[in-house]
Length: 144
Image 1 (cartoon, one colour):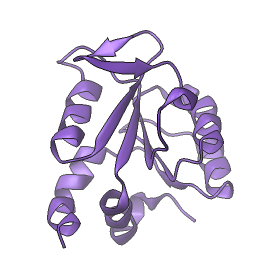
Image 2 (cartoon, one colour):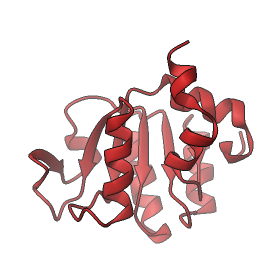
Image 3 (tube, rainbow, N blue to C red):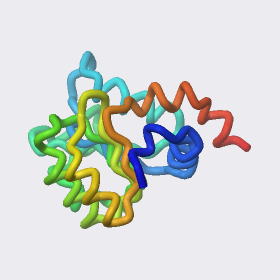
Image 4 (tube, rainbow, N blue to C red):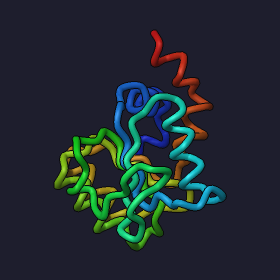
């Protein structure tokens, strides 16, 4: 399966079916893109978990040190870390049976993407989840 970035129907399905999203690299700084996009995802109805070992809490909600510490399974692992961290994050996503790994704009690692695909995960790389959500009008699709 290729990077789903090229398949609008597959992207729409991933975003419509998902209920929980782990944001790896979630910042507690309001001006940071990871914070803003996590807030957007919460506002449109997803349950969002912050994953950042350097932060204990964001806006009164716990921040987890690793994907394995999350209190429930997640549908999407949304990555806001540099590309060189993807191999380790992909391994964690596989170990928790995540359905999709979604790496933000500028984040890409070919061999890790292949490993995730071989493990049965959907892969979206170098793509902004908020931009795609809005472009594909997922909110209206979720209500159908």
